[in-house]
Length: 171
Image (tube, rainbow, N blue to C red; front, side):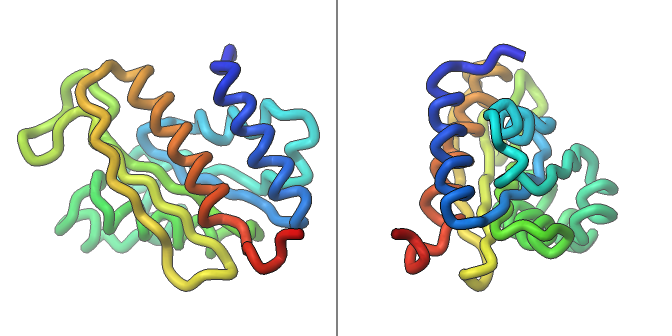
């Protein structure tokens, strides 16, 4: 797999910062299909900071592996802030990680609706040092599947840096 050099640079920074805090990362991915985990494990030494990844493309997988309440999936949909939140919390609970980043969205082309268009992605980060999870809605637009996924990965890494580390522990 050939990752964009800017994403490699960002992933290297994430791995280095998590290693420095003796912290570990989990991923819970839907629309990125494991690309965040793949990118993070592309970095040499990532085994010191990457704990595990969940690829939960189906609603059943989200419920079974991450304990996302089927009621949440039914009422809010797989592509929603509520589901991203539940995925991040579930990924953290189902791992020995310090932080979990979760993504769910519509990469396109197609598959969207007027209310939930292609390019709509929700990204959440849950961390042991914080209660709950931080969720961001991204409206990338119908810019193509690869570009939506690439932008999602970038925002997910930025959010891991912003919310996944305990700032009080940083030196």
